[in-house]
Image: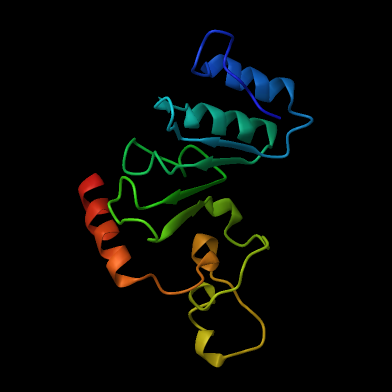
Length: 163
C-alpha cells in the first residue's frame, strides 16, 4: 500500500497519513516511512505515526537517512519499533561508512531473523567459539563486524556535536 499527497499538493498531511493507517489497519503488517523525505524536505510526524502504530499493534519502522543528525529524534520515547540510517550524510562519515540500526528495547530478546556476525555474538561467550550463535540483546546483536576506523571516527565526532 502506498499513500500519496492530495491532488495538487506535494507534501503528505499528518491527518492523511494517520487516517490512511487507520483505514487500512487490517491490511498493514508494517508501517515504513522516512523521517525526512529528501525530495521535498518534509519532516514526518514520527511520534504521532509511532503512537498510532503502537495503539494498533502495527510495527513502525523509519528510514532516517536524512533525519539522523538533522532533526531531533526520541525513538525510544516515541515507541518507534525500529529505524535504520546511514552516517555519510549528516554525521559526516562519507560514502561506504557504517550504517545504524535502532531497535526498541521491547524487542531486545526477540528471536528476529538476522545475519550472525562476530560482533553481534554475546560478549561473555564469544571466545568459546561454540557452534551456536548467541546474540547480544537488542540492536547490538545485529552487528556483523568491526567498523572501519576511518569511517567511524567522523561519526563519533559528529554525534558529539549533535548531542
